[in-house]
Length: 105
Image 1: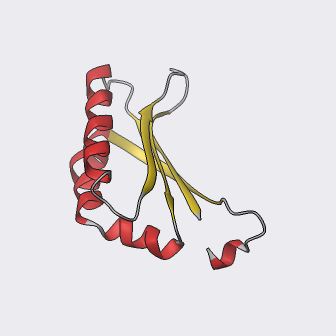
Image 2: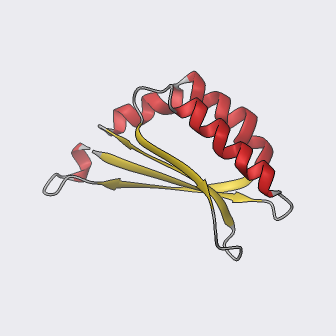
């Protein structure tokens, strides 16, 4: 099982309403994607961090993550939300099954 985390840099001028809308849109888009399990999204509660928004989800494998990235719902999120409201992102992948070699994830 692969856990995916993306931290998005948001512009300082983004309002609380805009961040709320990002959360709503992300959840409506990603709940339609079968490959993503335990999807989460939210905003930062620490005003000092440059990462004002995040998404995370579990995937059965890296191949399922690749399928997720090719999904039209994810592409819509990238086009309508990420490109408009964020300045960049950092992504992280973690293996969550003890004893499993990450290269086979």
